[in-house]
Image 1 (tube, rainbow, N blue to C red):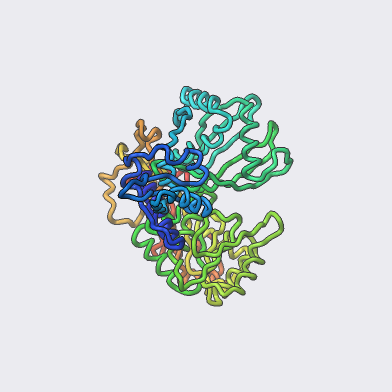
Image 2 (image 1 turned 90 degrees about the horizontal axis):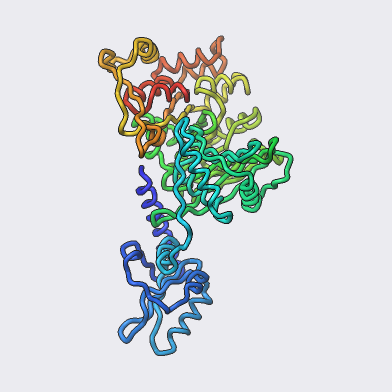
Length: 535
């Protein structure tokens, strides 16, 4: 989905919320998207300061035939509406107020009070060895005014689709890097005096201390305005003291509830059918495994959104809460301050939930409590750190031992990775003998592959796609628990290890992450090198 479509969806969602708000306030709602950039402005009716302070813009000045028409937002004070009513009703005319969205108000104010700020060049990601681009971006960041440089950096990171911003202290300068599509790229090397500005902003907005001698975590938000729409960026801040000062990593969460949708994850019809069949049952345990940054949280939230109906009570236990979802009760678990997922789970089960998501199973107590919940009428979703589904089972057995209750509770394990997706201008090539032999071993038994004409693809850098990639696509390994897998969990099988569990699952049709990755490379979705890097 391109950026324009995402912005359009965000604006649609905001207008719908404004329409609902208008009904509650008893005001007529007005969707201004068709004319907000072209309707003539009404000068001198209100001052620019009055418009800014009271979130009000004039649409039409009253004359003999028409009333005054004024546009207000949900932030406009009632006292101001009353004051305007009195001001413009003195000559016998009346005033009509319409409720508009915040994005609409900003669009009008950009015309009534156009920004006088300097336009800075957009940040660009440098390719390997491209010191010239790094120097240009460094110069830009060093010249952005002190009161805007921090917001500018976050806005540019969001525009580039970065998931993290790394601010790192070197001996003589500050290094800025951004993670885009899972790869960390150098962006700029800026003057040391910018360090004070960045740290001051983080201290004030994320509630962290620049003088701390211990690692810290914080949270902040920034509203991003682009293309006539806006969205809220949630930012998790991690800081750690180093030799030359505090290093910071800002993790950006571009929250948009409409995008937490199973249909947008890029899963195949078969993968989707398996998930929907499992979560249609009222009880059981579903585990998502994979390293940090593999998209586990997005998949779990999308499953929650699919289950989010008025008939179900859904609770989550999270450390920290990454996305706020309407209709779901989300409970923060502060593990750094002594809180635990197991204790929180035992507490929330008293609230009679239908679905519970536990942020992560980290210990035996949490594992046993989640298993107990899943056999007593609850659907439990959680994440677990392991490299594959079979490895997760082996680790869980090490954690809690062979357990008949676990065997009857666990229904599905999913391992996930994100690989960079090739841009459209990719180039096909015939793999060498070594690579072909590797693919034939990994995909042995696949009858619909023509090995004689098989092609792979490589990225072709361009101005639009400097690395030849565009976004990421998901690889997912699904292990559905059947009788044979349950035998491992109950202790009915003498040899319990990752290889034995994986062999049994593959006998029943499971495709491993490696196989999924090789198939994606053959389809031209990604490269074999990218699959190797990630898996």
